[in-house]
Image (cartoon, rainbow, N blue to C red; front, side, top):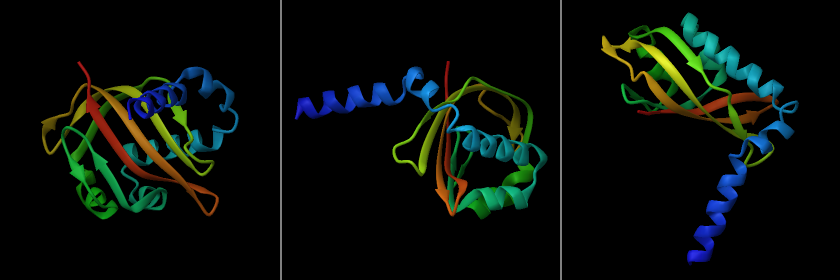
Length: 145
């Protein structure tokens, strides 16, 4: 049993190493373009783009909110007010050729329902390629010190 945990830990470290990311940077250009488009849609509150680029059962969890469907998140979108969002370089892992996990840190300023958002967070996004198009299936923010 402990050998299995060691193997999983070693594989996880290799999946999240920056050297693995550099080799795939060209292949990930399409994915990163989709990420940028979705980020811009959220900043502009563009519900149609968000709807087309997220899964209907999209899960979004942060210290300030939790949504378990795309529609719930879209309904609450007017309550999210971002004034600053600066992300570190993204680390991409492909568990399969049509799936991706993206991990990065961000500094954020803004509010949700009038409450201040966590200022420094680690973000994990999951994406799936469906019918040739990248779709975000989940988004999670974890506060960092």
